[in-house]
Image 1 (cartoon, rainbow, N blue to C red):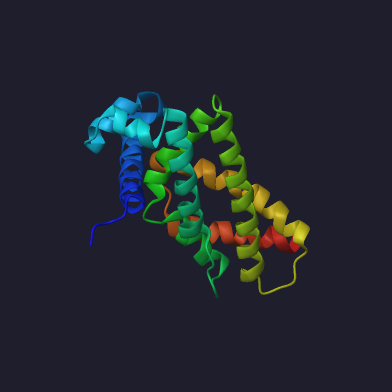
Image 2: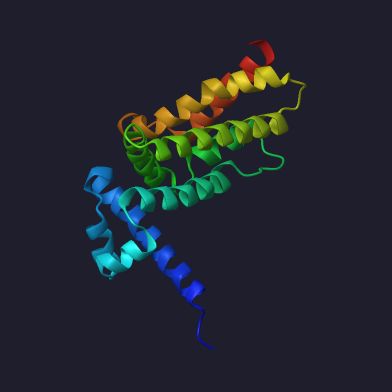
Length: 191
């Protein structure tokens, strides 16, 4: 049975998204062009523009999917995990390095693109909420919601910065996970 046009378009869009993310990693936001995406996707520029009229529309569409997937993979539910285990899973996730490259490009693009900036704002708000839920679930003691939120306010920028400094500093992720868990627990109990 032939596949529906909608299904075929969905498959094309998925291939375009994968190609775009690969090119974003290879060339950065400034080196990403519709022509380059079309060529690497094995289609004409006109065919690509049928799906996405310009670079901004393409980036907005694929980044929304990328950010959603990133949240699910990195900040999804982790039942019965200690703080140390949560940090170790985040710091050693298999997609950490490639995601860091994409995020650096997103930060850069967001300064010139309100749509991407809005998506990043929403992403960070969702991440904050999920991180608060993870900390609450991992604590074996009672903690006020405000303390959880303040702790996450400290940890999120650290984890974002870690993706930039990881290569240069080469910290042991297991030791770092223990230290982060200790800092977080100390702040939650005494902060």
